[in-house]
Image 1 (cartoon, rainbow, N blue to C red):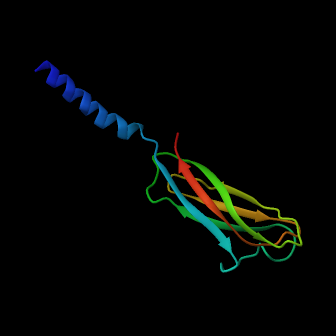
Image 2: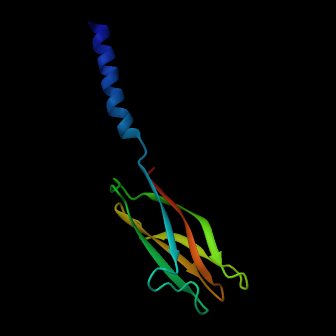
Length: 119
């Protein structure tokens, strides 16, 4: 009987501990291109910015850390390719991806992936 009780207690602790210790992770892809209204990364000179709002499928228990990657850039070969991609306005529910270029760079599209996790 004691052995049964210990095994049951161990199983119960395992069932409770592992979901609590799991690191929630969510991920997705992002993209900005000329088909978006107000797209400006391919026009003019100076600083130009586009933003992408990302809403999490399930809100996190606390503010997550965001990792961004760039997987594709289509830019004018006649000019230097300058860009900056960063996560801003991070909350438990959502965040914003800010894509920026400057000077005479002309980008026709840029895309990548995002990953959100809590420590």
